[in-house]
Image 1 (cartoon, rainbow, N blue to C red):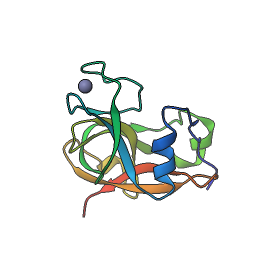
Image 2: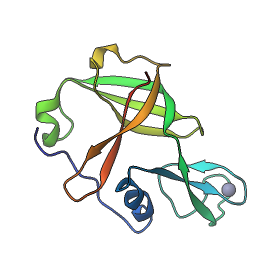
Image 3: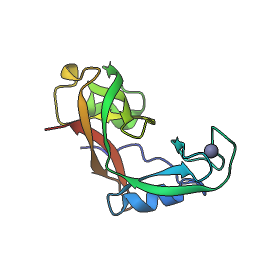
Image 4: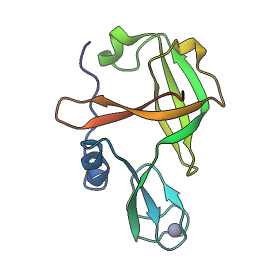
Amino acid sequence: MSERYEPPVTDVSAPFWDATREKRLTIQRCADCERWIWYPRSACTGCLGEDLRWTDVAGAGSVYAVSIHHRPGVAEMNDRVPYAVALVELQEGVRMLTNVVDCDPESVQIGQQVSVAWEALSDGRNLPVFVRAR
Ligand code: ZN
């Protein structure tokens, strides 16, 4: 398997990536209005509050939208086509752009239950992907 595109780490996203080293999915929650926030930001998307707390979540959700890519978006994905790019809505309500893996991509459908799985990156981080819930 060729190496995957590895997302950059920023100051704001560093706690997220650190947690992935332990295969923990952690997302921000606003201490003021309790809104869950994804992707990592420095201010709440609801109230602009800046007291955002990293909170571990179970990584359970459902497929909100899916598209099957037959041509890779980035060269690192060349040997993976076709693959399923999905918006997964976590139980907490945020939607993550991700891949649903370990199944026929054509079988991925809106509404299916999925749970987080981890794909190792070269630097010890893990990339959250999703598998069909069993
Ligand atoms: Zn807020």
